[in-house]
Length: 356
Image (cartoon, rainbow, N blue to C red; front, top):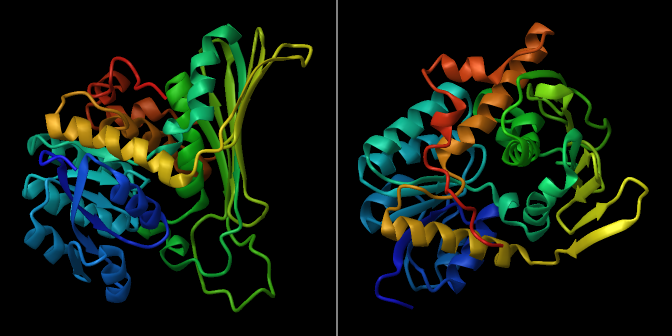
């Protein structure tokens, strides 16, 4: 490992954090100086006796004094830790979503800007070979008429913070975030959004279900200029686990999922295909190394920034607003409330996307 490796602290060593930990252990560009988890035993096991182990996240940030922090924790503590990182001049990479709501997201982006530190959101699907291939094929479709996206996953009865909408829980902001982010990455922000969410759709009899107020499922319709439309449906109540996007255009269709990308002409004949069997550690490794390279250089442009992710969260917020009003809502109007445009959100986006 190079002496110039990025010194980093991982906060949250379970689930999502476990994938990041495996990738960090393999990276030649990152040196782990601390691991923190509320479960002290998990933090100690994850540290491997080669870095500090903590069960106090704030103490971990202060004592390890890293150059960067990886936040694999729920939205509420992630926001507080991002504020502390900005105060101490630490680059931040955090698990999706960007924030619990748009006001918090704008505040965090501006705070990190003032600190002159990078703020990255782990929208890891942008790094999947299959979805990246779909992006390279997009121009071959010509005019796009429709996009269809879905994400289905049975979360089970133990919702914890996911059952509290004020804590950032909900199928739309958790699962829908990934699909909306991919569509915006491919198509830009829509002109209007109409959405309906549902709560209370989990199966009775599985267990004593706790009281919860976050949404279980959502259907989002995004309308673009020239009559193009994107439809996304998400649910956390049903298995098998499935996700994917299909683009319908003049030249045919592109269907992409976590495992493959297939381009067919309008008659259904396969024109191009790619299989993606990369492991989570490999995917996270490429994403983490990309972040490490740009953070070490403190590059002004970098992939998957918080600013770029503001577009996604504005669409999530517009969808929740539409569910309450029963009307179409414009995410551009929500950004304008903070004196922001879509162009402002792209100020840190790389001019050329990194090669897959």
